[in-house]
Amino acid sequence: MIRRLACLLALWTCACDGAPTADAGSPSEDARVVDDDAGPPPPFVEDTRWFRSSVFYELWVRSFQDSDGDGVGDLPGLTSRLDYFVELGVEGLWLMPTYPSPLADSGYDVADYVGVHPDYGTLEDMDTLLTEAHARGLKVYLDLVFNHTSRAHPWFVESQSDPSGPRGDWFVWADEAGEGCEGAAGPFGSVRWTRDETRGQFYFHQFYPEQPDLSFDEPSVREALLDVTRFWLDRGVDGFRLDVPYRYDEDLPVCVHRPGTFDFLRSLREVTDEHDAAMVGETLASPEELGRYLAPDVLQMGFLLAEATIFWVAAQTETAGGLGRAIDAVVAETPLEGGTFATVLGNHDLQRTTAAVADDPGALRVMAATQMTLPGVPFVYYGEELGMLAGGDFIVDSRDSARTPMQWDAGPNAGFTEGAPFLALAPEHETRNVETLRADPDSLWSFYRRLIALRTSTPALTTGTYQRLSSPNRSTLVYWRRHPDGDRLVAANFGRGSAALDLGVPWEAVRDALGEAPVGAVEGGRFRGELPGRTVWVLGAAE
Image (cartoon, rainbow, N blue to C red; front, side):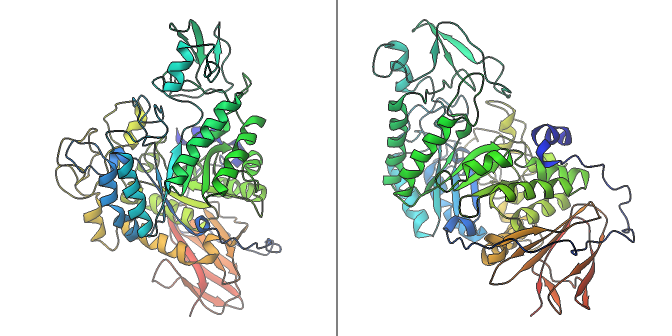
């Protein structure tokens, strides 16, 4: 199922390049990696923007930490856990929507863009969070949901009740239900027009009926959204994740990557640049389209079309070629002096990573290590570092399986709340929690901490150039990360069996920055070693 999904979402990655290797034991004689055809290294452009050397962490305030015993996470609870991010090593925090909302779509149905949901606290609590985060060197990104509002938003209420008023055309209205968007996706159903009895017309929505689309044809809508952005920047927010920005401008049935979208994003960029803030967009674009979003005057970061599935497929099928080609294609289209792409293994719209790879411990590690050593900016979804399992309690839809409360300790409610959690905890929280895994130096949590420390302290892994080597062994992905401060050669084996490596290197001896065991020897300028299954080596000169 995962493989079919990835093929449909990411044909451009050529991820479906064969079945898993039949032999999971010893590698064959020709299962080597050679770099004779690597060619000249790509040009290096220095990029000192803070986010390029950082790791981000996505979280849902509702599920992270409850401070008052009502079973719902809140801003004071999150503030009390800020030291956790420092310990883990992440620098950027992406908060899913914190605004007042009926929660028909977990907060992505916004009823007030300049407030805080009462379940989470107050604007003063947000100010405190920002102050405390900044004191620890952390950056806070809010989720801007500008494609649509909630039906409860005053803008929509005014538009439906006063068609000739100043906000009468702020939403997309029609006397008859028209056509929808090409390629409309679930889980939001097939209906895209809903009749509003108050106004006597139909309104358009790309998602749930509770989420009417704003009309970006209206200049006053665009200016109002820029004012929202200024409001949060003035309060000290460091940047924003943009929800479905590729769908802002629509000319039915075409709803994606329209010219009006790029016009508005440039205006948004001007506002954020005034505050030295940055944005990451849920662009979900092909490599060519992503290059347009990452132009110097548009976004600083953008997510890939296939998102996590390119990693999942590599682990599921034990073939790395599709992942390698996907990254090659994106790197080729990324402007040298523009933005950069962002990578994920999971997020709030996807199943838990453990579910995607059948809870294979080796798969979780090889994916994490590859993500942290590839170019782009890594985003970690909360609980990923614990190997959190999927929950079975749904409030909105099946995506709730990946939105269960954070697991802090082995207590009855995993340290999340002293009350009854609003959503049932995921299985095995007694063992898959921060307190338990922190005490084990070989745990997944400890592995993530080492990975993040390695990435953020190694310029080659953050802003270095990327150059993939050819690999006759289809389970391996091998690539150079080059930087004037020192190069790294990364070898990732997505297969379960070992892989023989034969690589030209400029060093007399090598060491693996991730492990402590010997990895092989260098003779005559060539490194030869056996890369174990589900393992990543980050090779550099031995000291």
